[in-house]
Amino acid sequence: MSTSKTTKVVTITLNPALDLTGSLSELKPGTVSLVDKSSFHAAGKGVNVAKVLSDLGAEVTVTGFLGKDNPELFHQLFSDLKVTDRFIEVEGATRINVKLVEASGAVSDINFPGVQVSQADIARFEATLFELAETHDYFVLAGSLPRGITPEQCAAWIEQLHTRGKRVLFDSSKAALSAGIESCPWLIKPNDEELSDFVGQHLDTAEKCQQAAQSLSQKGIENIVVSMGSEGVMWLNEGQWLRSQPPKMEVVSTVGAGDTLVAGLCWGHMQNMPKENLLCFATALSALAVSQVGVGLTSQQELESIELQTQVSELSPITNLDSL
View 1 (tube, rainbow, N blue to C red):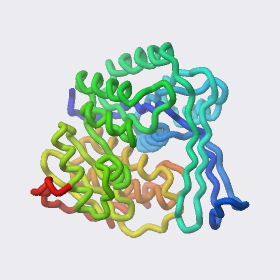
View 2 (view 1 turned 135 degrees about the horizontal axis):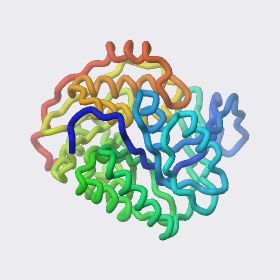
View 3 (view 1 turned 90 degrees about the vertical axis):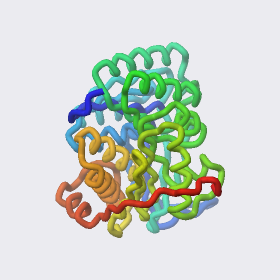
């Protein structure tokens, strides 16, 4: 695969959603909670990544599965972003996910099941995916799986792209993450909770996260990135650990911050940024995301200001992996 700069990228969202987001002072489970303001928009992890990449200047093609009953907001978003729409439309309605954002910054997600994908739908998707592989080197596969797609099927797509020399950035969780890790994606980005879930124990320090991530490098994954919220980001590549620390931000919403980090990592690699600059840029972009509602690059000037305040340092590798 060429290492020259590129702006072309494919984002894959197998289980997109229409996000109904409500902001309220405090969620009161079991009783009535009053929402102060709300929004309803097309989303999904890969869709969010596509939006940020488009804002950064990428030529984005989006694919995955959409329900035939309610695709209008997605079509409008893709038109507004000027991205190429290669989604496969299937029977049924794309799910609606509810996100409740409290004044404290706490976010409660209520995620519904996605559409039911048939074997014929899968065949159409595969034909699209491998057609795109003829003209693209970067693929971002992000989010959960709809009904009809197994973790093993998802992992097989990663493996097939890998064998074609493609750079697959994979961001998922639970069974999909576990299966996908075995298929040698080029980059994974678990957060500390997802990494804890994967290894089966609570990782309550950066050192424990580093230890768990380093054990994964033995599976041949070239880039392992661990996001730790306000504690920054750690990145393992070619035996070298880097850690970034963003400035303290006034958190409005953490929704989409992880997707923004993935987009920043992807764009930085597509533009062949030096490693320290790349991690600084991606971390600052993600930090900017928590200061706003919704995803996207809202202020280049503010991004550059956060970059100047983001610190990047090298970490020593963990020498004892047996204690995990």
